[in-house]
Image 1 (cartoon, rainbow, N blue to C red):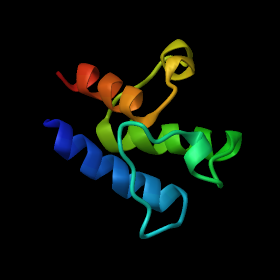
Image 2 (image 1 turned 90 degrees about the vertical axis):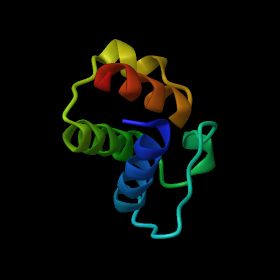
Image 3 (image 1 turned 180 degrees about the horizontal axis):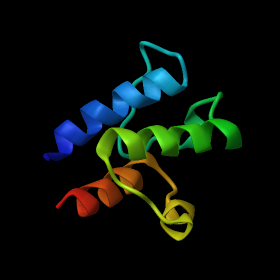
Image 4 (image 1 turned 30 degrees about the vertical axis):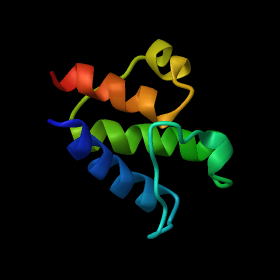
Length: 80
């Protein structure tokens, strides 16, 4: 799966979780950029990403992420 395909799918997931059809994300997007991104929505986001991509993340992996780019990189590694 290409980086563009990962971001396309992640964008759809983010739009669904945050109920915003116009939300755009990029590698530097973080929770500080999305007002609704709190601890509860973060859990929902991780669950949706894991289901959509058929992967599982450890708590340690998730805690390292500071931005969407790090999430996308982790996805790319798992899907390789």
